[in-house]
Length: 158
Image (cartoon, rainbow, N blue to C red; front, side):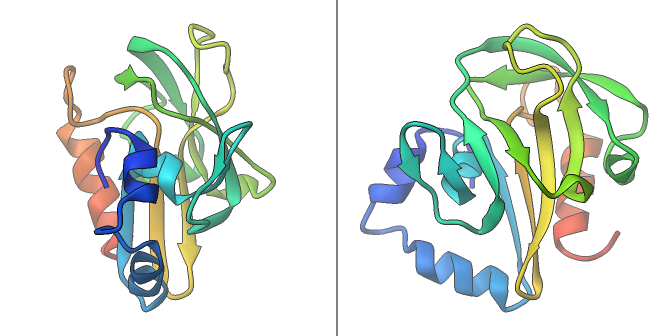
């Protein structure tokens, strides 16, 4: 699920959140970037419920556009080759969870006010895999390797 407006996803009669949950639960993958991450999270603080595909992940509404540094966790080294990378943020979520093994990267700077909050999380839902990313690896500066690795992870190839 790409960026955009998560309420559009959640309130759109043509997008069936329960079908998405069944798809992932049955062993498929879900990659949510920006609005797609908000929609799949458990809750957007102070605003609305998400689909809960990642029931341990809540999000904070963040209003920042521009480059940010993210820092890879040891778990996230499977996705990002290196410990720190610059990535584009377009009002995507800052995430938090009690389940620390799912955090792949955190915000390394405090431009958003959410330093050390999760920038990228990975989780399972049923037999499927899920990655939520606040930042956009597909926009300038593009990080095609990160995007490729995210897709390979949710498809159980890494």
